[in-house]
Image (tube, rainbow, N blue to C red; front, side, top):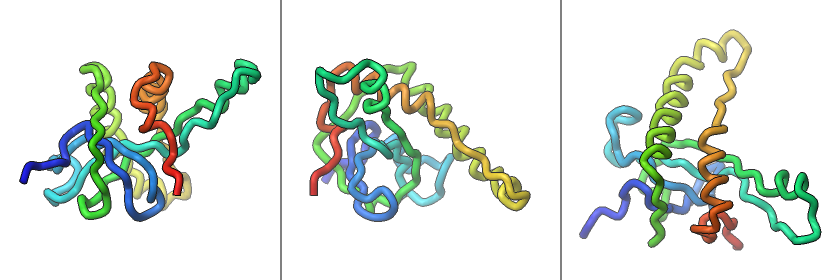
Length: 149
């Protein structure tokens, strides 16, 4: 049987803090982030955009359409692949890969900062903006709606 865990595949997270959330596979078992071949690097949606009506003002629409993202390494056993695949342009792929590398490098170095009492906050703004562009383009509507269960 073929490998269904390819880059760009939309998956559902089954357990943990983000259970029920949708995510994209960014890197499939690369040695950079994890030695285990069963691990995936996921880029997912932490907060989904809320419903918008025609009566709302522009500033309220901007607030309600914000998307927050997360980056996480998860085992293949804890995600459920779907039939959907999201395509990104090459410059978006480069931005995503650079940002993911920065996040994991800063997480490795943040153990020193945690002991001093200051926590390093990770900035996902470029990743949020990429998802916002996809959301406003009107494609992949299913990805930007939360699961109802």
